[in-house]
Image (cartoon, rainbow, N blue to C red; front, side, top):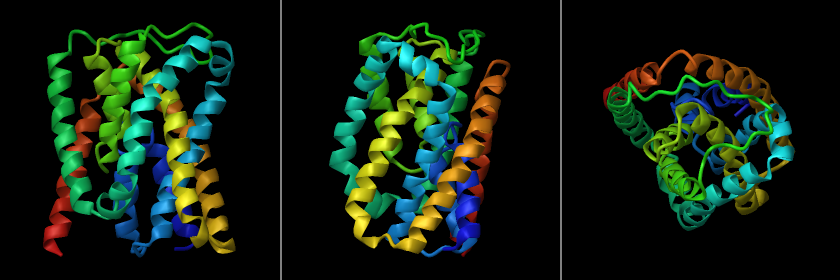
Length: 264
């Protein structure tokens, strides 16, 4: 793995982390296309650079984070189910699922189909409210709904499912408006991905040398810059459109990679 690879994967992470198309799945598939060997460091890199994307959320929503204690409490409550299940299944997911393009491809296709079905079922219920970036207003989400979102998010431990898709669709199923659950999904990513990265680095700290630190830094900064642009673009997009286009994209990408897997 070299700096060019780190930049490409950082761009992929920054674009896909907050879209319902699976950032982890795209990085796994991108790594295959770039011919990067499957190593423990690559898996650590794919998880660590997500911190760059998460920092983008902290920057964009800093005012809300320091002014709304209620929102912070609900984010913590939603994080608890993911934290518990993540600790239980971390090693299994990293060892078996993160190295499987087949799992990613199937998850992308199945998830795309479910999103299309859900959008059609709820086409008349989509909220047209805009997200007020930096607002101190509390989100209209109950603690029970927050716990449910946490369990939905846990499904995204399967590569290709997408943490964003799981929380957004799960939140809407729980009765939360589309725009509010999108914002909550952004905020919930902060403790979730931070914990996942710290845990992974702790378990693999002995494998990281000076060259690896450089690669991690390049990927981190790239993901941060690209994520800021992606978040703002995503917010503007969903105020006017549904998630169907993302679902179609998931299916197309999943089918293409399934074809490549069986072709090779």
